[in-house]
Image (cartoon, rainbow, N blue to C red):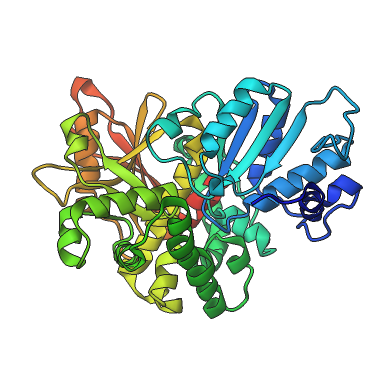
Length: 457
């Protein structure tokens, strides 16, 4: 369909008030950390295009609008259409394109622009990452990818205007191993004030609009209708041509019941009528591309990974509670609450180290399947294991047998246990059988609210 140029420009001008010097009046003053990432890209002339990607309703459009407003404020003119604005400076043309995933073959178009129009710098948003294959590979080196996950715990507190307690600033969680017992004793009582807000975060979640709602029922309805339903029913159809919406919904519901679990694709296919094994695998790929889930491979190499089962986390800790209509009952169900905390912690860990392309996996002993490590992070040349034990009871050594076994096998000296009990906050020694006379391993027991806050941007 051919649209007359004058009508097209009138429509575009409605979405671009800065063309005529009118700043948008509904921009929030508070900015997410991703705004700074986009500004850093603007200053770096090496990579000329950027993909801001994340689940729907995470605030990608707002990030761009805030960035544009900042460019206008400092005197940078966007030369969008020569037919309206003549070129008046040597500045590159900066194009901000929203929701590019709906444009057919957008990766090819963006690649062409980068390769042949060197006067352009192009930033795009998308709610769906390129799937594995040639389309994804074509972007390597041509565009920078900035992930916009759901709100971190720290961003959630800022969005809701909650003043955070004054805590020590740390460069990384590993720096806590240098703390003294006095440091832990001083910080614990201050950090306890975070507990009710952290539980609210698990219930309301990290999607900005629902998170601002005062009513939990309305918040969870928005999560179901504006986030999950539209992604499963509209985006899956429009972006990937999925027609079996009922089967897609069944599988996502299954994942909500098993959030943070190791999944067996064959078992899922047997349990869910009408979905065979290849279809389950295909839908999981689409969920991951649409930023609805994270997937972890088992720790190891070669066949250990290829034959292993994936571990799946939902994109946000509040999604399972919203889909299952749990309301505040989530806080009264230890297993569900523990799964939500593990999901929240992993999202923070993943988002913190995403830009560094670090790897994440989980570990399970071949002989003793109850010997498991929830998350293994490959941080540079260092393996860092994490266990999440969000429970009221004391964490006894026998409950960390899997962690001890993994540390023994890999000669590791440090690990983390994410806890609920503030009385456990501190460093423990762990008996190991490390070779070469290595010192005893150390385990840092860290309350979940502090872990998520310190990992927040």
